[in-house]
Image (cartoon, rainbow, N blue to C red; front, side):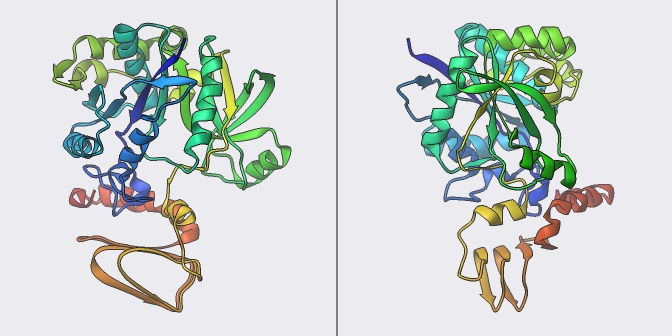
Length: 361
């Protein structure tokens, strides 16, 4: 019997570390950052392919109201029509998203159908490898395990969470521990040990299995999310969650709420050319570059410069004699930051928010 998998694409984030291009109403997942397609289009196409090992059902897209029209237009253009757009009245992190998805899939398709929970804004270069990892994970998820996918680390990265593997099981390993964004010394120790993976934030589980774990480990998330679905408003394929019920839901990540507490967590290694595209430096790393290590998009001229990333969607931007810079010019803002400090862009966004510059967010 073919395994049925419902992809649930989380597309509600605002991608603040890719400001000024990424904004609340037009976040990074709705931009074509790596290819000519937007990232949500790439993600939807990735989970529309066929496999001899499993069958993808039409996806569920979870987003907020201000992103809905743009996302729907992009996915209509691609021809990857979701079964449902779930609109969050307020952001509540990934555990409530997983809970809502499990409730919807359980009601429509049954407890045994698998859910692939994945972000809309990640880049995966090796699609065949991705599907192979899913097939390995599906064998575990069909037994009631909650599967996460681990990326073999190639550097002591401090911006990712880590998963320590335990005893082997089928094509994966039981999870021993999760560690969220370690310091540089700890990350170096993790890398040297060979026992750790980067946490890709992609999960696979049965709808019924997840509901049981939610009820056991974060009952308030389960209760509020269930009520948000019970009282949701349906308009065609657009389902708007009940604002009061969903707003009462604790804001907590799926890792913290479930994966770090359950005894059913397993990790499947996934060599898939993954990047979370979580910063301008990460995007530079996966972009095509010239002979001097520069990457650019738009109306840009680069001279006598090295290892820089320049984007302009309007005014001409010319650089000369610089190195290791990120420069992003939009119609109303310009960002200049050293590549090594790309993670600090979020601090700029926080300062703009505190200063009341909501027109720039």
